[in-house]
Amino acid sequence: MDIVYIKQLKIETVIGIFDWEREIKQQVCLDIDMAVDISAAAAGEDIESTVSYKTVSDRLIEFVGKSEFLLVETMAEEIASLLKKEFSLPWMRIRVGKPTAIQDASEVGVLIERGERPAIANYNL
Image (cartoon, rainbow, N blue to C red):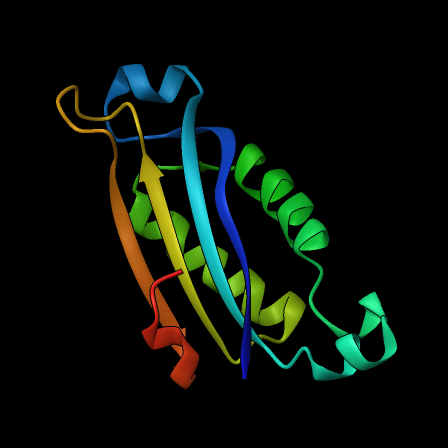
């Protein structure tokens, strides 16, 4: 199994538990690793034989941009559910970060994995 990935996808959305957070859009950053067998796509130079990171990115920008989650944990779970349902992914690793949440941190957030981990996922991308 191979991995198609997206790093630092920036999306503006309503996210947070505080009243002031419910009134503004904040940036979240997504890192998505998706298990995909790319051999057929590589052999035939056929984008239809793989998961298109452009298609996934566009879908996540639409979905997250219209959402209003309270917690990044909920956002991560809903992203995982969407990816599994719409792209039939057997495994994914999703990092959702809020870069402006804590003044003294470059970013805070959650990292989740769903599905059966392929051997290649043990490497840091």
